[in-house]
Length: 163
Image (tube, rainbow, N blue to C red; front, side, top):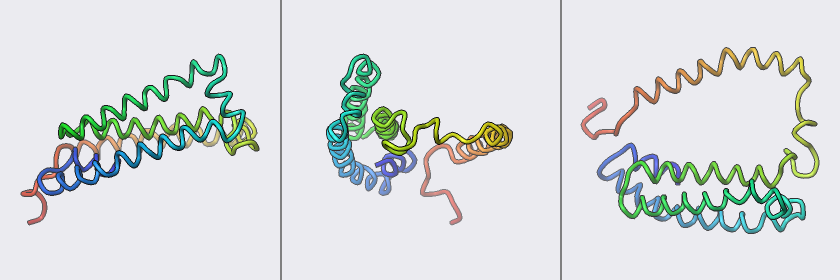
C-alpha cells in the first residue's frame, strides 16, 4: 500500500494508473488486517485490555482508533477522487498509528511479558558512547536524506532519463 501510494504521487500515465489499481486492492486488505489485529490484541491478555479500556489509560488510547478511522477515510476518499498526495500521507498515518497501537498494548515491555524498556537499556557508559556517534551521524544522515529528496523531488517523467 505504501509503495503503490508513493508511486501514485511520484509517477504519471501507465505507472500511476497501475499504482491506483494496486492501491484500490491493497487498501481494503490493509484496513481489514489492521481491524482484525486491533480487535484481537486487547483480548490476548488482560493487561492489554486494561491498557486500552481501563481508566485513565483510555484517555491516551482512545484517540488512536479515531485517528485510524480518519486516516482510512482520507485514504479511500483520496483514491476514489484520484488525488495524488493524500493517499500516501493517509497510508503512512495508518502504519504509524498501527505501531503506536502496538506500543500502547505492550508498554512498558519490549518483548511481551519478559523485558521492560528499563531492563533492556544499556549501561550509561555505553549510551554515552552511542550518543557521541549519534550526534555526529544523525545530522549527516538527515542532511543526505533531505538532499536526496530535493534532488528527486517532483514526478518522474517519461521523457527524462538516459534515452
